[in-house]
Each structure stands twice: as structure tokens, then as C-alpha cells.
Length: 119
Image (tube, rainbow, N blue to C red; front, side, top):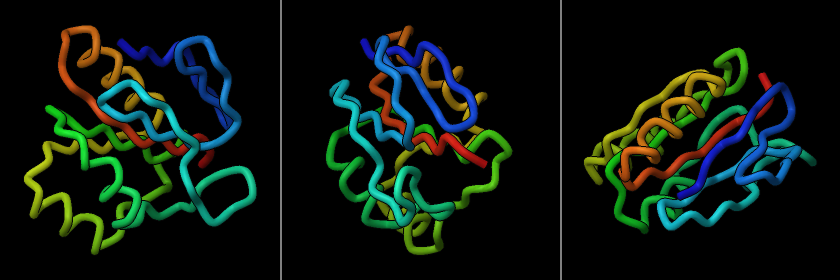
């Protein structure tokens, strides 16, 4: 089971490894750097393509962390995809999102997440 050990502005620790960029956590437990428009951090808008890759794996819940201040948004195209796929999506500021991720994962739920680590 993957666990988010901590998070702050500009960083996140997943399974003991510190990442200084946005992350995507797949239901399989794989953790990847989020592809984004900035050098170190992802864009402030989650795109359809990001969710297409993440949602290839079946999951009970998708957690979207919108940043420490909740600034990031889900694009219209991305939201339409999530609606079409009927993916149970929970959108929260990132500090709350990682708590929810850990809660679901600790109860054996298949959870995917995309976490923005700045604003």
C-alpha cells in the first residue's frame, strides 16, 4: 500500500521518498512525476490527457489535490472525461487530499491521485 508520509509547499513525501514536483499516484502503487507546463511543477490546470493515463487502471476513488491553497483546477475537457468514465472523484486542497488518500488506501480501497504541490 502506498502512503503519503508528508507534504508542504513545493514537496511531497511518498513511501519515504521526497519529490519536489507534482506527483501522480496510480492505483497499482506506481508513483510518477506529473507532466506539466513548468520546469519543476505541473500546470495549474489538470488536463484530459493526465486523467486518460491515470484512469486506465480501475479504481474506487480518484483524489485530486489542487495545491496548498487550492488554486489548481480541472479543465472542462478533463471533467467531461471523468463524468463519462463515472470515476468517483474527490477534489480537495492538497494537504486535505493526501489525508483522504491515506484514509482510503489504509482501508484497502484502490485509489489513484494527482497532487499539485504548490499554490
